[in-house]
Image (cartoon, rainbow, N blue to C red; front, side):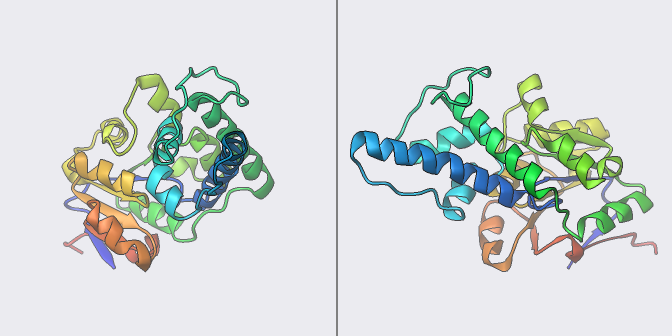
Length: 251
């Protein structure tokens, strides 16, 4: 259990996928579809071995929490593959980083339409609790679908600010593990990082919050990932948001 004294904190910033909604699994499957198709084609063209994208190890290590372009380039570089960066307007059938990212986005949108948005049961109670204590809340996600996911989940009104993948491109912010997104969210909340707690399930996001000198960095994940999240900078790790309580020392 993690207890946050509201006398010492003014705001809470949350990652979306894997913390508020269960869309992280949809992202990972969209990445796997993209990379496996690409790797199969590469193996056929080069007569080399085909090693599929690993839904757990590769997703967590190379793409989780990062902007799409960074995820494409990070994973392919790990396999010794370099593709042209391309440009934002590249089509989904182009083998550039932007083209592959666009293809991944298409796969994600298809899966999301088919399966819908599932919210972690522990998320809304904590957000409502924050409202009762007068705390400000924000979402900071690299996803370009952040707004539509929040709308579909019925959670839009519970966040005072949103910084997402669209803002990342529009404002030229560096993606996680750089702290830019979290710092921009804190700025929009008019909250000092030292008086703000961040919730993240990705190691890149935990590193970003730590780099931004936030007052409390809470990793969210199963016990098997606790040491990894702590190693990358989390102060505490919880299995889900049900293990977080907001309280005033005066009460």
